[in-house]
Length: 503
Ligand code: HEC
Image (cartoon, rainbow, N blue to C red; front, side, top):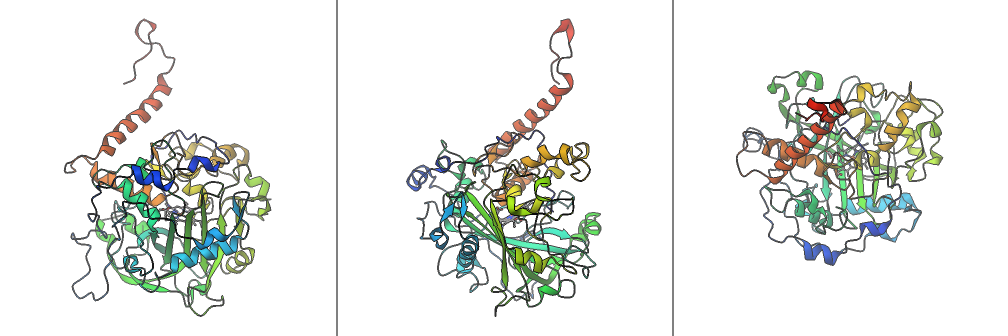
């Protein structure tokens, strides 16, 4: 799916299997005391090429997306969240389905009424992530072209080739999505971007002595829409629809061959097929829970929202349970009883993944992943890698994947150890890899937004002032290169037998 390619070469996540909760602790009072209050707000662009060719045509009558970016400078107090009533045992909820439903209700409350123009929500304030207007999600895409469209601020994500959802889907369909964060999450984002021209990733937690973690109760809801229609995927009938300014050309290979004009956009329909939820709950094994709902037009319910079926939720990756332990062959069947750090709705798996449908939502070895996610991944597996700089979110995406013999089918043993690092339980706020400078605490949008920021603001011809992240990035690049350079000269004697100096 997301081909995040970055220079993460030496992965060595600390191997902390089960995080204990005290590591998360920075209480609200301390966060508030240390938080910066002099923040500048309102400068982030709303959508792709805003004011520069990406605006709606003059006869467009609809509403135009504005990023909700008035992030609070004081950490808003915790509400009595509905999911907190559900007891935990061994780092996960006792009643996972009830927990998931509680998460969904909270995310929809007041937001459906305002069509997810969330700054208008009458019950509580919601916000969005900066720097997704100019977004490069897939390395082969032309820079920036995945950025937010102007109707609802959806970004372009995964292109699903024919046959991904079912036999009747012949052509590419693509996913367009948007995430909305609650006030406690927004406080953290607002600290990072307190100075919008000089983001500080370490300020996610204003307390420098603790992990770079968001406060308990931080919450995100992400709506995933697809261009797929009922003929291609029968269960999409009656789905919730939005207009969106999407690509005129469906085929990514065609678009990516260029020229730039092939990324032309025009208004079209997208349908809500998946809702992802993510919550910081300090009772969880990792500090986070990630869960998902899928749309089923055959489900009971008088609105499309009520026909969203809970698919599953994860609070950990079961880092020691290998593929071979859960699946009897490369193509299954998989017995996921051993995966105790998640809950899967088995009936939904059956209903949505039986031919001619293949709306499969399980990932590596039976771990939870979304239907529009890579089946070699899992929700928590990808998200635990979030940080700055971005690193590959899957073993397959590492720059040297070609020589690693990662093919789990032909090399199950050889592939296993490296791959299992991608299914660790990184404690929220800790870095995944020694090639990262900062953790983004499971927020891949934060990590992506920062990446988008540096790609424009640290460019050679960027106008001043130069953000401090640019120097850090240069020093980081230098250090990575030196580390690799040392490997090829290490032990080779120079003049008089002295160590060879690195170039
Ligand atoms: C293959 C990797 C991958 C998998 C698997 C994955 N995600 Fe994500 N997710 C991403 C990326 C990359 C982003 C940021 C880009 C975006 O939102 O457009 C993201 C964004 C999100 C967001 C928005 C907030 C954030 O952290 O950036 C939520 C919520 C989310 N995912 C939940 C889930 C859930 C729930 C699952 C499992 C059902 C899941 N994800 C599976 C890669 C993945």
